[in-house]
Image 1 (spheres, rainbow, N blue to C red):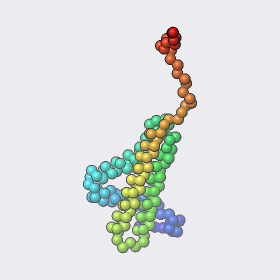
Image 2: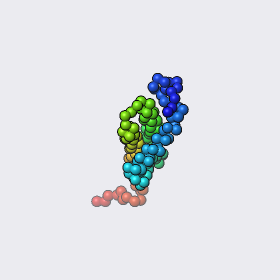
Image 3: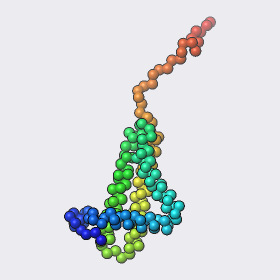
Image 4: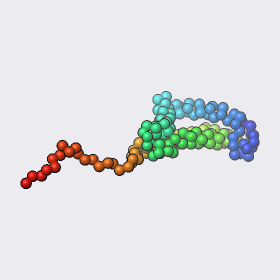
Length: 159
């Protein structure tokens, strides 16, 4: 268990000593539970889809010149994902300090929170890419009037 320190004593922030080691331990346990539920391939596909959604939503916006202007919030999706994940983990570690009746039920509940957060973030990233991909490029001004070359179109009308 992490000891309380500074602002963590008030219950607002987790103490950083032991926070990340407990977080990485829980991430490993969560991956094992996901592998048990979906199998090796299912777990790999889910993780790939989440990472692909985050990647496409941020780096994929650099495919065309006008895409960053069409969905600039796509670059913030990975940052928001990490901050949200850290907040969920802080809440989980706070709930560990309180005596919970069933640790398996708590693990399922936080697994569901994390799964929804991951899939929601991946969908936001994919939506940012889709919005930017389908956006029209900005107009660079009116198109110049096109006139055919003088020798290609007969202009004389005879009686």
